[in-house]
Length: 128
Image 1 (cartoon, one colour):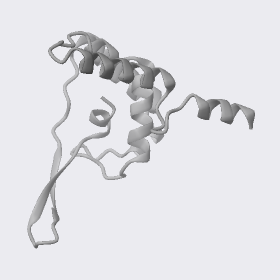
Image 2 (tube, rainbow, N blue to C red; image 1 turned 135 degrees about the vertical axis):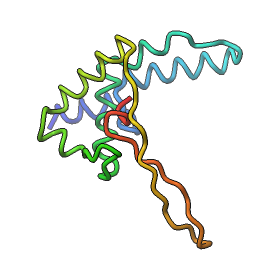
Image 3 (tube, rainbow, N blue to C red; image 1 turned 120 degrees about the horizontal axis):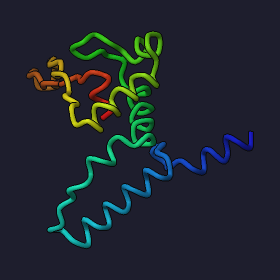
Image 4 (cartoon, rainbow, N blue to C red; image 1 turned 90 degrees about the horizontal axis):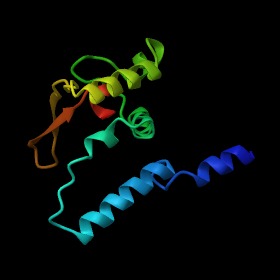
């Protein structure tokens, strides 16, 4: 019981780890203080372990619809596993060879009778 309390204290209300919340807060403050500042080194933060793991948790709890590749989060857990997926994404990001897959386009009805376009990304795209 105590371990879960400690874990909860390290997570924000959005369910993000403290380290990621701290990074987001620092970037926010810097951007507000210096609106003309350009963040050229953000790419290196994308492949941090805590960033990828937080992204996976958000994708996993999200929708269950597969993207254009037909793969769901459950398929990934049953196949190679989450660690293999995240390591593959991390390696591609580090090598700067990561290329997202196309988004599955579908349309959902609006209240006025029209249609609203909806893009459903693949699971790996959601993790980046």
